[in-house]
Amino acid sequence: MYELTVVTHFAAAHQLKMVARKCENLHGHNWKVEVCVVGDGLEPDAGILMDFGVLKRHVAEIIEGLDHRFLNESDAFGDACPPSSENIARLIATELDRRITETPVRVSRVSAWESETSCATYIPG
Image (cartoon, rainbow, N blue to C red; front, side, top):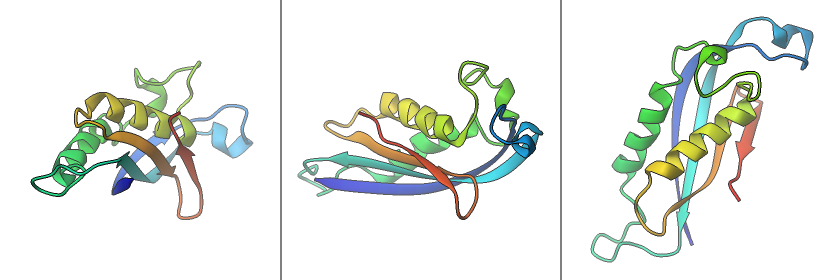
């Protein structure tokens, strides 16, 4: 089994209800996002699981829809799916999984760090 990891960043604002009083206020984060994909075999000619450039491009396209936004107003989130770090990680994993066409590569986990000390990780399964 091989695993590739890419890291990116984005900045966005959100409001979370019923978590803690301060989180109910409009606030922002500079998120760090770690995306990992896995697969059993390597492409025989190049000896790679997947081109890092292709993976980074897919992730950048997803992040573009989140960067410098008020996430509560995004079509991807709403009352039924608040823009928590957990749901951000799940959204990125789900969107990336749709874009990856290399077989048998799949998303193994996505972590959304809202600070240097706090992150949420989504593991598809």
